[in-house]
Length: 65
Image (cartoon, rainbow, N blue to C red):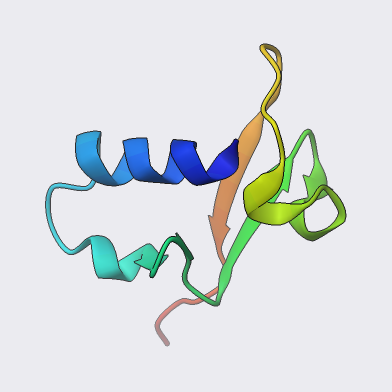
């Protein structure tokens, strides 16, 4: 599920400041998560069961001015 993917990302990819991406066991507000081009909120969020060909995209909607 997505929950396990986020744990893996934190342990293997986020070497510095994981709090910029994660809040608790989910993504921070302001990060859009798309699963196969659909908002993850429509897919069950953390409980969505990943399939082999799923495409998961994380997009930050926050930026500096």
